[in-house]
Length: 367
Image: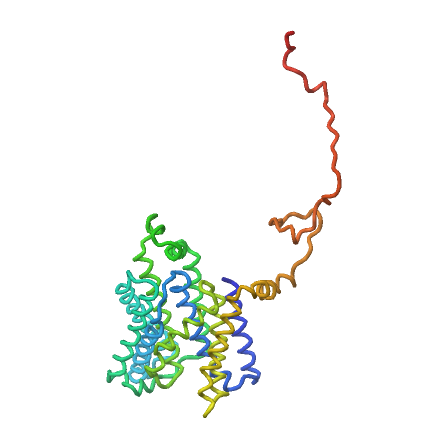
C-alpha cells in the first residue's frame, strides 16, 4: 500500500516542482487531470474485475452519471449561490455524482446478479449504450450538443487528493476480511458461499463502490472541461478502461496506476502528433502498441526475460548484500543470498565421552 502512495506522492511533487519552475508546458498541464481521472477509473474497475472476478463493460456509463449529476449541480450552485466558495461547491458535486453513480451501480448489480462472464459484459455494455441514448434526448442535459457552462473547479491538486482517497478506500477494503471474502468469491463461488460468505451482499458492495468512484471521476472530468458530451462515454471508453486494468494486471493496483498513466499519455500524444490526414493512423498505432505489450506480458518464451529485468528484480539486485557468516537474524531460508554457514565438504566429528559415574543403572540386573 505504501508503495502506491509513494508513487502518487512522488508524481505530484515532481510535477509541482516543474510547474513552479516554469518547466511544465501547457500541453503537459492539460494531461494532469485526465491522468488522475484514468487512475481512479482503472483502480475502481480493478476492484470488480481483478478482485471480484466479474467482467463489467459499463464503467463509462457510471462515469457519465457522475459527470452530468456533478456538472448540473455545480452549474446550479454557481448560478444561484455565486458567493459559495469552490472548496464547498466542488466536494458537494463530487459527493452527489458519486452517490448517484453508486445507486446506478447497485441497480445494475441487482439486474445481473446471476450472470457471469460474457453475459454480464454484454448486459453492462448494453446498459451504458441505453443510458447514453437517454442522455442525448434529454433537454436539461444539453442533448447531443452536451452540457455547457460547467464551472471549471477541478485542479491537479484536487485530482491527486481524490486518487489518494480512492487508493485508501479500495486498498483497505482488499486487505480486510471483507476483501478476503470478495476474493474467495472470485476463486470459487460455491466454496465461499458454503462457508457463509454472502455473495449478493459483497457483489452489491463491490459494484456500488466501484460505480461510486467512477461517478467521482466523471465529476472531476466534467469540472475540468467547459462542456460534457455523451459521446465521450461510449463503449470504446469502457473498453479503454478495461485495457488499463488488463495491461496493469488484474488484481494489481500498482499496475493499474502505471498503465492508466501511460495509456493516457500515449493517447494524448498520438492525438497531438497525428493530425489532419494522419489522424486515421492513431487507432492503428495505438492498437499495435497494446498488442506488443500484451505479447510481452504473456508470451511464455519471454518469461525468463521478464523475471530477470522487471523493476522489482532490478531493485533487488541493486540493494542485495551478502550477509555475514553466522548472521541469521533475518534468515528466510533464502540460501541463495545468505553466506553458507558450513562448507559441506568438511568432515565433522564429535567425541562423546560417557561419564560412568553419572550414568548408572537403577538397580542391578539379576542373573
